[in-house]
Image (cartoon, rainbow, N blue to C red; front, side, top):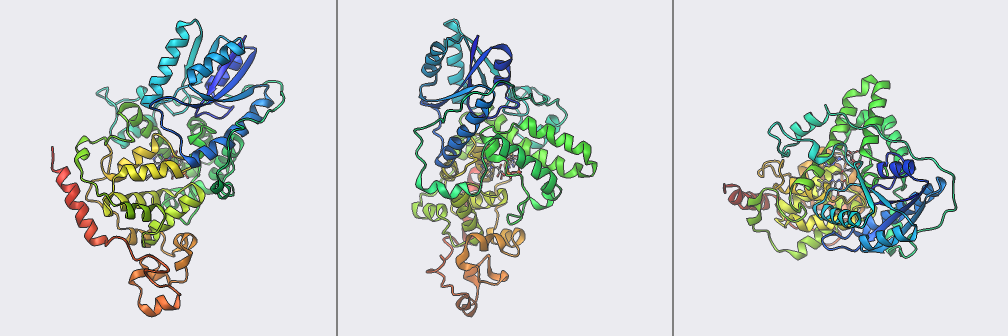
Length: 469
Ligand code: FAD
C-alpha cells in the first residue's frame, strides 16, 4: 500500500516519527510539503521563507536516496491532501504534530474530514522534548514559571530518537520551482549551511569545540560559543530529542563537562517552555500573557521604530545587533534581549512591532520562541523579569562587549574609537571624535533616546499598569 507523509516543521529523515511509521507500514511512501493557504495561519517571514526553500531542496535529495519523492504544493492543505491521496491511490496520511492554536484547529479539522471519508490519519509526537499536555504542575495546571518546569522536565523520560528509514534510491527531481530568491537573500547564504546533515554537523562541532565555554561565554556576542542550531530546530532539520540524547551520550564520554552540557540542555528546555505557552495560551503573538498589560499606553513613534529596525539608533550595541540581524538573519541572544528592551522600555514602542520585525528577518523566526521571548523582555510574559529591571544598553555593552569587537564588526563607522567610548560615542570628547573621523549626528546618529529620561518614562508607564490588580 501507499502512504503519504505531510511534512511541516520536521524536514529530516532521522527521528521523524511520521516518516518512520509510514516507511514501516507501507510499501510506498510519498512525502508532501504544502505552502499552506488557510485562515488564521501566520504567513512565514521572508528570511525564514528563504531558509525553507533550501531546506526543501535538501530533504528532497535525502528522500530520493531512500526512494521517497517529495512533492511541493501550494493551496488549502485539505484539498492538496485529498488530491494526493487520490492521485497515489493511498489510504493513509501521517504527520508530526504542531502546537499553535490555529494549526491545531486546522489539523484537527482535516483529520476529522479525511477520517469521515474513510481515510486513516496518524499524528505523531516529534517536535518537542515532551508533548505540552504531558507536563504539568503538582496542581495539574500548565506551568507559568520556567524553573519548576525545567526541574520536572529533566526527570522525565525523553523518548529515544528513531533511525532514518532505509530504501532503494530513486531519481531526484528538483522541487519548489516557483520560488524566486529575493535580491537580498544572496548575503544570507554565506553564513549558513542548510539541511539535516549540516544540522548534525553543527551539533557535533558545538559539543566538541564550544560547549565547555558555553555557560560563561554564551552572554558575550563576540564569542561564537552558542550552537546556532535555532534555524535548524525551527524547520526540524534536527529534533530536540536528538540533541538531548546526543548530549547525554557526549556526557557519558566526558564526565567533566556535565555542568556545561546541563546549562545547554536547560536553554534547549526554554524552547519546550515556549511551546508549552503557545499550546496553553491564546494567540501569544498578539495577546499579552499577563492581561493587565493590554492597557499599557505604547507610544506611536514610526520614525524611531524605523531607526531601530535599520540599526540607526545611535546606541552602538543596539545598532550592531539589528545590523547583524539584517545581514545574517540571526542575532545573538544577549543582544536580542538588549534591542528588545530598548524598543519596549526606552522607546516605549509596542513589543508586537518588534516581534513582527524579527518574524520577517530571522531565519530562526519561531512561532513559539519569538513571541514568548518578546513578551518576556517586554515584561508581559508569564515568567518575565520585574518591569523595573530595565537594561542600560551602554553598561550592558561595556560588560558583555568590553573590547567592542562585536560593535566594531557591525558598526564599522565608529570602529576607530577607543574602547572607552565605543559604547557611547556621543560622550567622547571632540578631539577623539575628530581623530576617529566621526561626526555625531552625521556619520553616526546621535542617540534617539536619552537613556535616563526614557528609563523613568518606562518606569512610570509600566508602574501604572503594574499597580493594577
Ligand atoms: P543556544 O544557546 O545554542 O541554544 C540552543 C537552543 O536552545 C536554541 O537553538 C533554541 O532552540 C533554544 N534556546 C536557547 N535560548 C533560548 C531562549 N531564551 N528561549 C527559547 N529557546 C531558547 N529563538 C528562536 O529559536 N526563534 C526566535 O524567533 C527567537 N526570537 C527571540 C526574540 C527575542 C526578543 C529574544 C530575547 C530571544 C529570542 N529567541 C528566539 C531565543 C534565543 O535568542 C535563540 O533561541 C538563540 O539565540 C538561538 O541561538 P543558538 O541556537 O546559538 O542558541
